[in-house]
Image (cartoon, rainbow, N blue to C red):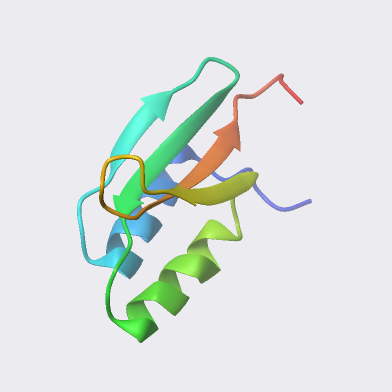
Length: 78
């Protein structure tokens, strides 16, 4: 069985792929890591590869800037 992805490792991989600093939001049952969507096509592909390793992922432009996020379910939740 593969090791459980941690928030720290997800955050580090997201920041490396996007080339930008991320933010973390604890939502109770899950934790989300947000980062601005990169403009470079290769960086966006690299970021999507990372996002696909999370329990859920998506995007939002509610702040006026496209931001991508990945979520991890807190241990013990389903």
